[in-house]
Image 1: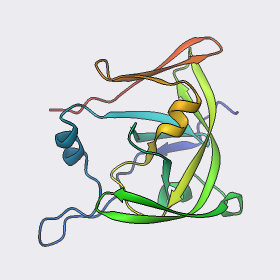
Image 2: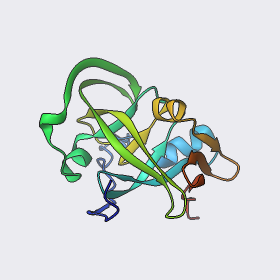
Image 3: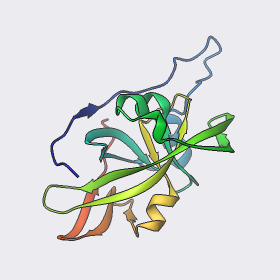
Image 4: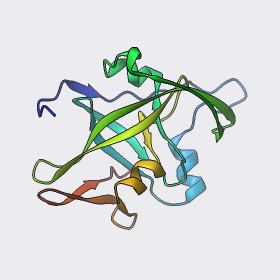
Length: 170
C-alpha cells in the first residue's frame, strides 16, 4: 500500500433535527448518554485517505461505510458486491444493505502500523460518524479495546500498534 495520503475525510454527516426536536441521525451525545462512558472514536487510513470520526462499536455486527463517504474515497462502484440483508435498530430505523466491499485499512502510527482488510456494508443513510468499525474487524484481527485509556491495540510487524481515541472536548 502506498504511504502517501490522497486527502482527508473529516465531514460530519447527518441531518438537522426536525421541528419536533427528534434527531434523524445517530448523534454522539445521545450515544454517550446512553452508554454513560466515552465512545471510542478514532482516525484510520482507508483507501489512502485519513478518515476521522470513526466509531469503534463492539455492539455492531457489521462494519458500516456510508455511501457519501464511499464516494469521497474515490471508490469504484464496480467493486461493490451485491447483497441483500437488513440492519435492525440502526438509530430509529431498519436499513437495507444492498452492497458490500472489501477494503484495506491501516491502523496505528508511523512507528507501528498494521494494514488489514475488512468487509464493509455500504449504506445510503446519514450517520454521525464517517465509518463504523464493528465486531467483524475487531474479532477477526484480534484487536483489543481499552476503554479506560480510550484506545485500541493490535499486533503489527514492528510491535504493538496503538490507536488513541479522540476524547470529547468539554
